[in-house]
Image (tube, rainbow, N blue to C red; front, side, top):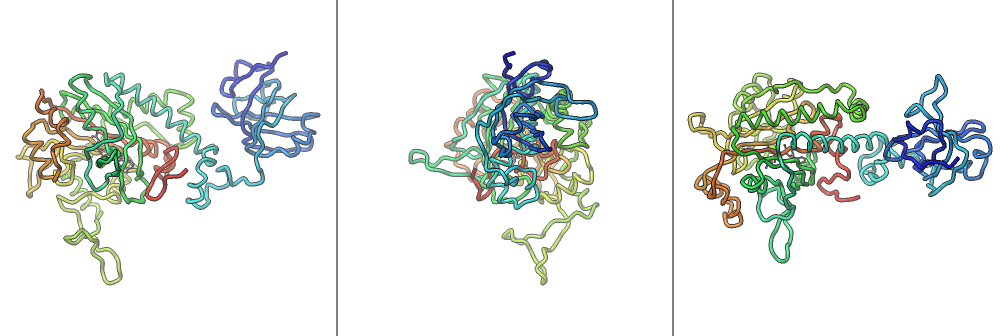
Length: 462
Ligand code: 4AD
Ligand code: MG
């Protein structure tokens, strides 16, 4: 009978029939006159058995890992007592090599090299992606993006695509990538927030999935120079609504992933101990967090007036308690979430630590000379901040004063300022770092494992 061309992931209904599949040789094992191949293509893995004449050819004896092959045969349930992906195997009666591979060097797939030099791994990212772990992370990422979109749409948010090439900053001039745009200065976007705000009057609540760029010289487990930024903006809400919404989107997205057997399987493979977080998330104010850090003896490096770390005679950084007004650095944040072990909102940061556009809390809340903002970061165990959000200033004069304080020329922001002129409204939004979220979900050590081709200081290849 004529063989039916099929994808590995859709073989189940074809059991007992002749099928034709193509893919890469993922594993290879020879036993006397039998050759076992685990064939790989995007939809899955398939065990294939070559025996008799088809195993005795020159091509069969010289077959190498990562070669591409076409295989034709009968799909049979695996013999009792044995296991194979999908519970079936292909008993091959005809096959050919489509493209050979050098072979011998298994370092070119991640099976052997997970422990090898990270810079070599980074250079070979295109081959590392062929490994079971890297590809599982990217498959989970795809499912995560769809689930996020479904959750956001079910909350009546509309997807838009803001530009990457911009002439305004959002999160501070220090981390802008600047370039020459037909003779003018322009930047790679840090955040699409300002554009999302302009959509509210016509499109209602909106979201986008866009690359954001940060020229941060941070070599950490959670910083990339380019990352996928999921951002949303909602009108006629208050600060409490904002946090409740973020919580709902995250929990609904995770629930969808766990309800689907394929994605639940990927999560189990990558993060066997994962459990869906309970609602409501813990909420702790910035001021309480400072006290909590001090009660738990978590200190930070002392800095002088110029912002340099103060060192003792042995060259060790001098450690000091936190005070209201201090930034909660990555290390302290991580220790806090590791001790608490659950997702938590940190909210109400001092205005001087946060971006210019954030809504101030009422003056009565101020103390020790600090004004606070309606801002929140969502922190996850093992990663720290995965979401940054806030309510936005609604008054034009207040915004103009904020530009001035930040040293921003208001001219290029005319369109953003106009939002306050033509029917302002209470609104707020947030940005979620997709790679950080995935690092939490899939229990990855670094966000570098969570991007297809990660970019960090000094790296823009492959
Ligand atoms: O806290 P951020 O800077 O907030 C904003 O950009 C807001 N304008 C978003 C908004 O309100 N629409 O960034 C938001 C999130 C962070 O919580 C983090 O998850 C991620 O973006 N992020 C990064 N991820 C990887 N590498 C970096 N360098 C990142 N910088 C921020
Ligand atoms: Mg932030």
